[in-house]
Image 1 (cartoon, helix red, strand yellow):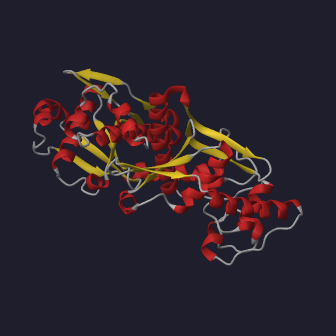
Image 2 (cartoon, helix red, strand yellow):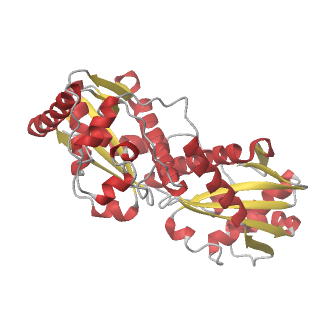
Image 3 (tube, rainbow, N blue to C red):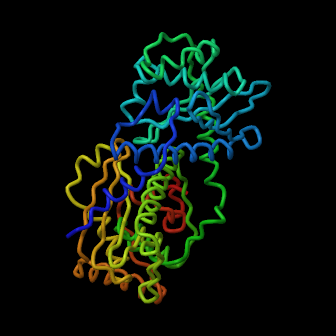
Amino acid sequence: MTHSYPETIYKVISDRTRVPSWRGAVLPEEDSLQGRFLEEINAGARRMIRRYLKGCHGVHFYEGAQVADDGYVETIDGFLQEGEVLSLVEIVPVSTLFYERFPYPSVPLKALVHVAAAKAKVAGVDEVILIVFDRNKSAWSAYEIEGDFDTALHRLPSLLVSPREPMDLRVRLASRITQALDTYLYGLNAKKDPGHVRLPGIHPSEFSTSECDRRIAYSIRGEEKRESTPPHLRRIFDVGHVFHDAIQGALGEAFGDRFAAEVRIHNEGLKIVGSCDGQLDDDGFEVKSINDNGHRKLRKAKPEHEKQGVLYAVHLQLKQVNYLYANKESGEMSNFPVQVNRGLWQSMAARAMRIVKAVDAGVMPDRIENTRACEECPYGWTCRPGHGGFRR
């Protein structure tokens, strides 16, 4: 019988102790196992954005603390110093459904503004910067909140019961915040990450999606990659890491030492290097976060993901790979367990060996004629020098 890994993950996260919070009272996720999972994801997304703020503003941003009031325990994301103004920073990851309504006066979002103002009153500051983050599409907006914070705190008990009090706070867009953060994220392209060393070789995630043998040959040779990740795409990648961490952590809690995350492989003959997302006995795991629209269309594991998974599975002698897809909007998870396809492995291995032999002989595979693939290729600078339109 196939193990129901999504239910195991949900249960581990649902069983964790939770403390009541103002935010949780006025903007709860659906009261379900999926909703509890999303609370875990939201916490990770908040940590992600705090990291961005610290990198962008340095000593002018510092993380807050926990404060308790009337039985509620509140986490203050941080404080930002802009000249003479000190603002409390409130980060709120939400679904696309909620994000696209803000700042219009829909009921829990009006209350959310009051909660942020009440936190500021407790913290003793008179300005709030509210960052609303769409975890499904990785869009974000920042707002300034000003007004009568005393009244916001006074009204909070009634808001927690029924968040329909009239808005008496001023909310206006603060695009300078997200613009500065996007500039910071774009600037990361010029920096080397000392914690991430890409080994020369065939990387399954790239090999399974690229039709260009020449690109794979450059990777085997360890050629310099020149690429520029747009801020929005970087946020998408980082949200993916949040989902990976939550799911891998839950599987580790459920199965203890039997489960291993980020299992490294190195096939010397085929030059394949990479990490399988997880291994439990002879089961493998590939974790994918996916937007709501993509998840609704899923009926089976995506072919490119199966290609990636089989490269790990054969090396690790797995019987099957579980392709876990997590819906970033709803928290729903789908698992597609797939037996190792030896025929697929043989075709992938034959392609890999063909490219390895060409590189060893000093012969680069032919270029392909695919404008879009070439424009996005991190090796375009050496493969097609002089084509200024290609990413560098």
